[in-house]
Amino acid sequence: MTYHERFNNTLAIWTAFGGRGNLILPIPTLKWEKRYYHHFGYPQTGSATRIDVFDNGNAQIAVYRAQNPRMSYFNHQTKQWTIADVPWWNHGIPEILWAGDGVFLARIVGLANIIASFDGITWHNAGFCRGAQNHMETGAYDITRNVGVVSWWWYKSPVYYSFDSLTERTEWTLTGSDGNSVPIFKYMTAHKGNFVGVVGGDKSIAVASSATPWAWTTTIPEDPLDHRYMYIRSVNNKLFVHRFRYHGSPGNFSVNLCVLNDSATQLIETNLSHYGDLADNRAPNPQNIVWMKDWGKYALFTQNMLYASADGIYWEGVEQPGFALTPHGNMFGGAIYVPGDGFYVKGNGFVYYAPY
Image (cartoon, rainbow, N blue to C red; front, side, top):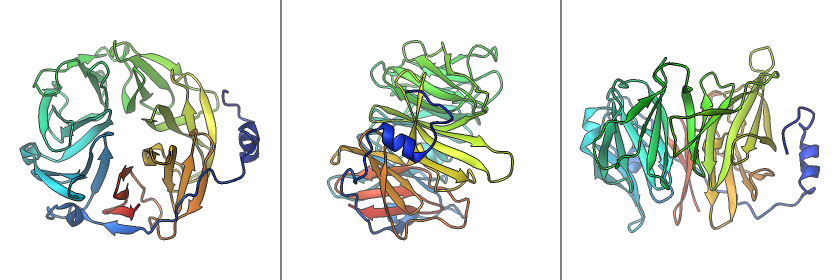
């Protein structure tokens, strides 16, 4: 089913997908509390407070956005967040470019190196992207072909790739330096043998086979209605994207959670949408989707809500009292589930935690 502008209301979607009106499972009402850097084992560095959480499918980490020579991972034996010595972070602030398929890819702010880990404990110098010290924005890794890509948000130097070992320091190959043959990306993901990205300017989506990461094809071009895209993510074999459209005055955006087909050529609009400011936690954001293996469902977190879906298209939710960010404009920025422990959702200077 492709998107049509008139197919844009909850009743139409509810009818099209079977008219389901009962909760797909008992969605829990959770008890939320705030966790700060010291809960993850970090001593404070200057005035830095930001903690990001990531899950690569096998391991979970909490990253303190400060120059700090350590990394915190969830120890499944002790059920505790545990500091691992990571001397790389002595050189600068760590930023995670990709978490998925059992791989973490990171950069150090101000350096051109790619740092990689499989377990969040041992980190390897996986290579370097010549000339990309300050502009690497996003990346992805396909474990089936052992190939990674990172995008450099800068004119005429968009994508680096490598088929080499993530445990060896080799130079990643730059492609698209002519400024035309390869798009620049701010959001990327790996999905079923492809790399998929939102092209710079947020107006189109492009795909490359992970076998040929230098050859990109636009699959969803700019449309006359001026829809734009953000936060593209593959979660448990489903490809999600955040689509929005500006309506001519400040704070007037229509935002929809959409599902792409596997080739990223068609969109299905889900029943989750928001109208208002783009920076609003009521808008459904793919960054905040997790796959709940025990439920056999997707879970999605928004302001004061937890939603669940069996197919990623039809969602039902339960209110979560006390799970909100204020003032307006502070955004949830990523969610993970740690089996046997609970949910973690990035807040503003803290992480929301709910045991489950």
